Image (cartoon, rainbow, N blue to C red; front, side, top):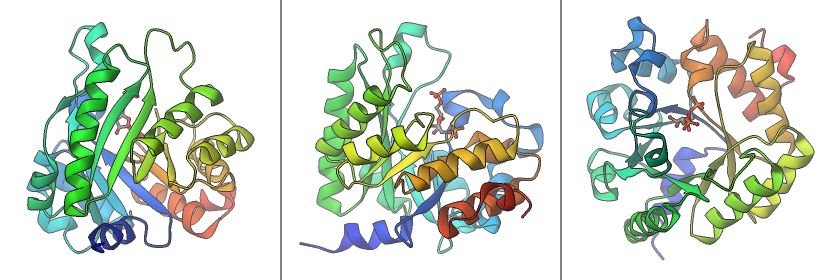
Length: 266
Ligand code: FBP
């Protein structure tokens, strides 16, 4: 077996844990989420790289435009699926293919990421797309991160532990090397999610900006206590008052097990 996947995974998770900056919001939510001064991706990517994230998960357009900033400094994961919020609501449960594993490698990437909305009426299509991506990634030794998001007409509470654990399990069994999913509200419940993933690293998806940095850091701490492998965070970093301080604080909690209240002062 070739070592490529292990080499790339070790760049993404340097000590088995990772702080991954997610930045695909321009597609998923629109530019309104991003402050005017940071619409130039070079500004924000420079800030988070300098602040010390381990990896960035972003779109091919942004990765290409900022390569000289992140190359040889942080790992790069290309998000190969996407959708906008402009679509009719019922079509928002499907993501389209916007890149490929080959393009991710051509861009200098260390991994690929794609969403599966478990429980969506389009689950069949998304699963087939995921499998195509995963098989190519396997062939080229590229780790595949699955955004395992339970979301669909029969899913009443997408944050319920049995639902999130089901998505994480399905992600593991469909070959994900890394799983990104929702926080379930407590350490005890998130531990069940981590267990369901059977050893594949589980990272928390950041979510909307919390009322205070401490509130977010407490969630991160709980995820780490539960055996999680870190966070994939967007809004709680790029909408923070002090982006660099927030990254430092998240790093301290993830990599050093720092107390969230203490980390908030960093
Ligand atoms: P956040 O930390 O901002 O939640 O980013 C994580 C992420 O999964 C992004 O990658 C993606 O754009 C967004 O959340 C998806 O948001 P939504 O839950 O509204 O589909």
